[in-house]
Length: 163
Image (cartoon, rainbow, N blue to C red; front, side, top):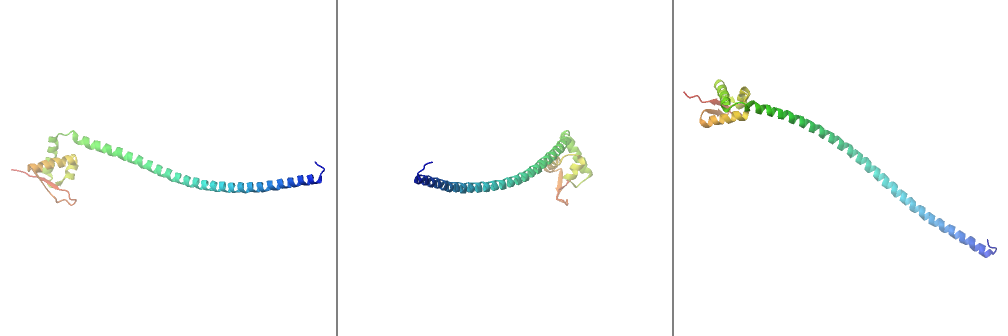
């Protein structure tokens, strides 16, 4: 310390100015810090809201995925069942020759005139496309005729019997 009162007063004044300046700077820094904390808190709240919305969307999407997986499993099961039916259907007529199919249909129509293709198929065990094909051949050759008398709009078929 100096003994000179002016120097001592000058040092005290310098110290007061430094402390006051530091307080202003500190106050500015604190205000800036508070602003940054408020911005970060706002960002945090926004991110929390986005997280909640994302979790809700994720939950909805998971339930949709589960629903679709269930549908896929059901479609696969239905597809397997239909494949089996198609294979059985195809097998049922592939072992028969055209002549055997013709005999079955001819015999059925002799005993059941005015029968629909569905009735013929169900009774003879011959699939509908083959029945239709044979009847069209009969019609072209003049050996069968059809009329639209069925209530469901299906043609009713009969054989033309020649003496």
